[in-house]
Amino acid sequence: KYIKALRLWIRDRVPEDPGGPDFLGYFNILPHPVEYPDGETKYSTLAQAMEHMNTCLRSDPMPGRILNVEHLEMKLADLEEDLDPDCNYWVEDEKTNKFVYFARIFFKHGEQVHEDLECVDFVPKIIQGSKSLSKCSFESFSGVVKQARDWLNQRKKQYGRLVSVQSFNYRATYNWG
Image 1 (cartoon, rainbow, N blue to C red):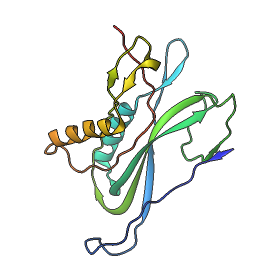
Image 2 (cartoon, helix red, strand yellow; image 1 turned 120 degrees about the vertical axis):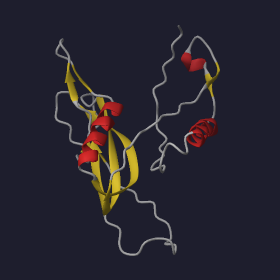
Image 3 (cartoon, helix red, strand yellow; image 1 turned 90 degrees about the vertical axis):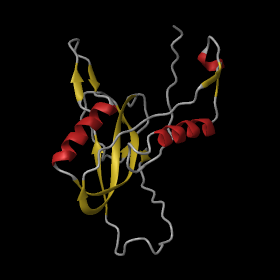
Image 4 (cartoon, rainbow, N blue to C red; image 1 turned 30 degrees about the vertical axis):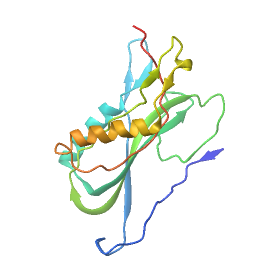
C-alpha cells in the first residue's frame, strides 16, 4: 500500500517577509470525462482543465496568492470510477493500471487575488538521432533548464511571476515522418 505525504520546504524569515502566521490552502484542477461514441471514456487535457479553472477564477478569485502548482498522476482501476484527488492511498496491483493527471494548486490565504495560470513544458532535444528512440541521445537537464530560462527571458514583459517549477517524467514519442 502506498500513501501520499506532504513536504514543506521552508527558509529562515527575512525582514521583508510579512508578519503573522501562514495559512495554507489548496484546490485541485480535475480533468472532465469525455464520452466517445464507441462508449470509451477519456479525459480532457490539462490545458482544457486549466482554461476552465481560469474562467471560474475570473468570477470567483481564490482567497490568496498562489504558492505552488504541481502536476500529479492518479492511478485508477477503471476510467469509469469517480476521481478522488484527496484519496491519499492506493494499492499497486494489476487493476490499478489506468492513469489520469490533474493539477493541485497550493495557496497562502490572504487578500483575494485573480491570477490566471498557464503551464509550458520543455523537453530535452534529441542530439543524436536513430531509427529507434531507445538509441537516441538527448540533451542534459541543464539544456532543458536553459530552454526554459531563454523562453522566460523572451517573455518577461508578458508574464507576471513564476509560481512553480517542476521536473517530471515524460513519455517520449518520435514522429519519423
